[in-house]
Image 1 (cartoon, one colour):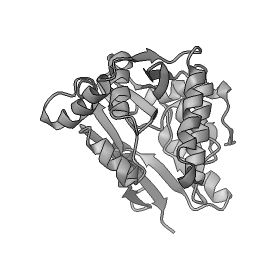
Image 2 (tube, rainbow, N blue to C red):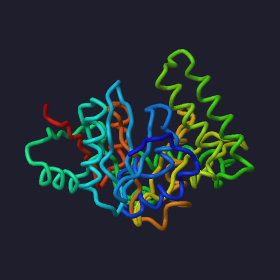
Image 3 (tube, rainbow, N blue to C red):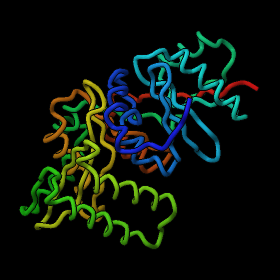
Length: 295
């Protein structure tokens, strides 16, 4: 098994493998693996008809559970043999509930399996995000109403004609936070910039919100499974009341109507982000597990 860097040329075959599993988990799509390939550094291999992903997080090496319609058990055995030959302590991440059962059945007592709440995906009914109906969304509707008090606003689909303005808006968003900027924020900024620069090549769909002719918010996502669309990035100027809920709703109305669910990814343990994502009332918190081989 030979691991190598992920390139844009891998999009077709990796995307085909991701579609075979049809997972609702946000990281199992090509754009995610490609855009975060430098941050974590991500490598890819193919074994037993599966995609094998390897990455580094906090100086530890992890493998994703094999993806695709191949022989996952044999692929796991190859991962373990490879890791042992490299002197690694095997850790497998991004495991969904049904995969946890498979792993426990194939290797009883061999792994310590734990769930990390910080990595659970927030999945919503598309209809809920589009309509914001009922008392539970009263606050969201109020913020949107205040935004609409500004009559000179419009939503448009991201294109080559407006993506440059989104890149500039992302840069202004960064400059507004210069006093608290850190390495993690820079990593995300770089990833978002690359996503904007190559959104067409990556198969991403974007939405743009304008106020008085200026871009004040944008979002980017892609189909994740047969019934789920994933939103990877969303940026707005927070000082503009209603900008965030407005871009959220307008994007879902325009681009997600063919999907039952919208996955808005995890909160990574950020309390502010967790509060915001819970406020939209997810219908699924998709838990993911990590398995660590016993010593």
